[in-house]
Image (cartoon, rainbow, N blue to C red; front, top):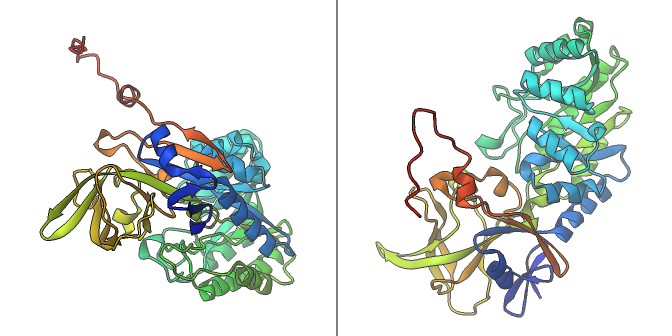
Length: 429
């Protein structure tokens, strides 16, 4: 067998998800569809827990990477908590079996309704990102007759050295509280009588591939923790965030043992419970998007492969010019030559790859867009009135559709006509 990604490999010339033939799966569920390998998710989780096994630490899976119920439930049964950034994600975590006291609610713009729902649920803690949010949280908690457990999310002014659009820890970014302001809040925490300050949190970005920004951010927030702990006896936890990258095109990724060593070194002697919030690192390589070739044409001297997946199904290439490996579902030994791989949406940016070396392709051939388990289906839309694609999970030789493709009638039924527009007669009869 020749591995393509964790959980996906060629057996002979047929690409499989674990022991499931993807061509047969495509015939069953139709294309395009997402496929997740349960074993790859489990292996990624175990690798992370092994790296931090000597620390007083827990993993809180970042649902924003992939919020399918089957994915969340797989991690819940392994013991993961949840890092959520909306009431919807919180409710998904609870529905998948993650207890409320294993949920951290992050995010820069929590609404009053979201805060109320999370207080009612009894979550572990709120990662607060501004003084204004702390005031709202204290007021809401007082109205509900409870005390809200709070961690201050610190902006350490550290550049994660990643894409500009996914850096979150620099001065001027919308995320977090400056160190000086956090100290001022801690000194006057009694001004917020319905909150209990239990920790600090930091998260500097996504797709992190360099240890030094992690070391610098962890060291700064650990120093702040020591200072605040001397005046706030309720402090108990330090949330070190997530953001570790995966390999999209064979590039090196952060070694988890080295990453854990940085956490161990910078937090030594704090006595704090540590939290880690990986998302992409747990699920990114565990998913692929299977798509079918609709047409192959020549345009301006370039080979153009039109597929049935589109930017509304996987937006990363359009949004970040992100690279995803694209491989044929039936392996070919034929000579490869450049092709542009594009979708059917009426936008020039609906492009997955340019000048990508691919074997000869024809209408009906299947392709797999790799490492699509994170920020794939979860960011999908119905642009061009395209139905959301199915999601399938495999385990060994078994598979299950874990989100079905909605019908067009169901898609249209989400809308309703105002009273002044009489329904048109159904001309289909």
